[in-house]
Amino acid sequence: MEYTHLGRSGLLVSRIGLGTMNFGDATDQAASFEIMDAAINNGINFFDSADVYGGPQSPDLAQGYGTSEEIIGEWLTKSGRRNEIVLATKVYQPMGLGPNDRRLSAYHIKRACEASLRRLQTDHIDVYQMHHVDRATPFEEIWQAMEQLVADGKITYVGSSNYAGWDVATAQLTAQHRHFLGLVSEQSQYNLTNRAIERELIPALSHFGIGLIPWGPLAGGVLAGLPNDEDGVRRKAPEVQEQLHRFAGQLADYERLCDQLGHSPAEVAQAWLLHQPIVSTLIAGARTVGHLEASVHAGTITLDADALSKLDQFWPGPGEAPQAYSW
Image (cartoon, rainbow, N blue to C red; front, side, top):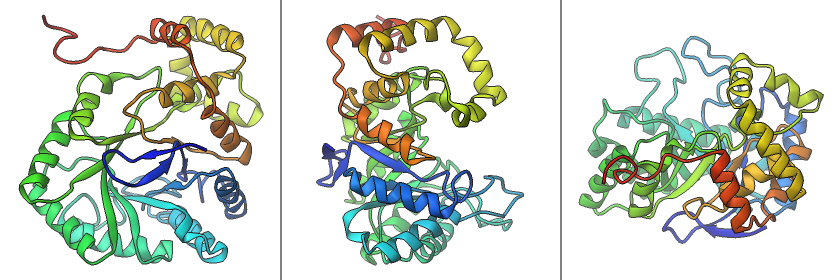
């Protein structure tokens, strides 16, 4: 396993990170323990979760909330391997039906962090990520809350997720004014079928030295190639079927190229992400040990200039603003 810095920080993370959204939902505790054991054995040190993972992510349904963190906490206690991983989780999503049980007020950030620590059975979170932008709360208030959590030793670094380029810029300039490190990472949807963030978000991340953590590297299974019975369940979802129909021609060309390269479409899709300089680690949301090991293998694949050029032809990016649409 290779390791790289998370953005401009001194923290080293594995190029493949373990996503735990399925824990407690599609994957039970016993299987989750096996996946985490396999992750450690394969050199993965970045474990990513969120307070809301483990059940239906809906403000009207409270069941399952926190289950992913609880499973990780049980594993950490039983395995004794807390100091071997970089533990990341998130705050923002509704964790109850009260008006302050969500978003990024200082009130909610403090309470949500303490609740995550209890579920994770640890005294600190290594990377505490804002799960979505909250434009109703000023960054002065958000950074005040995060600074206090850092001072209390409850978190070490702060990351964002699903931010626009101008959100990142606003956050960082406010942090700099407060003499605070600010963001070290941004977790965003990024894959061959969806390269929208190349227009403005990635240039902003590069400017501020913030590492990108792509989620959805396989576009919900669209880039996974021919499914086995287990994977086929997810690909039957209406939104995935629409994408498969929309990209049918490109997928045919893509899968022929993957055959020529001697790697599966899922492996090539993840390898392509790891060839992007801004990417620190990618989220492998494994439901089985086999899925995880396929992602680990993707980290060993080198794509030459010809392969990268063909992938750009099949899945063109939007270009960088403003040159992409102006002189």
